[in-house]
Image (cartoon, rainbow, N blue to C red; front, side, top):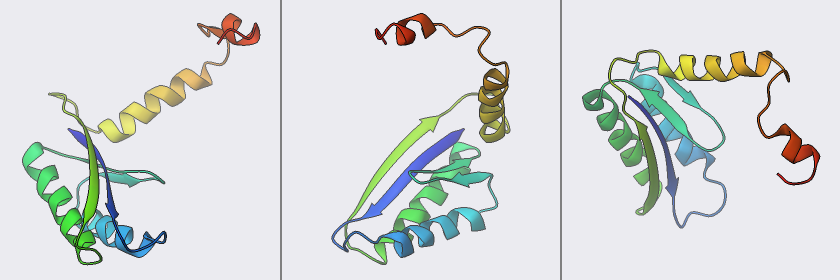
Length: 113
């Protein structure tokens, strides 16, 4: 499964980078495949591996604030491994195929999309 999550400390102002870095450190130390971007950190593994990592990341952020907001999105698909890489590779492959088939392109060009 892949879990994308965001943990935000509340009440500490706009600069939450230090608190978020604490959560990312927990994820990276887990040894599970992971990626961090501007909005979410994604981590891949079995349910019983991933959920404790997310919980520990939340606890790391709670060290900075007594209240946190957490958003979790889960893609739980049996038999899939290396999903973090495979999903992005699939999109990149389709992008590389160019403009030869773009459903909806006519709508955009005509101002309808």
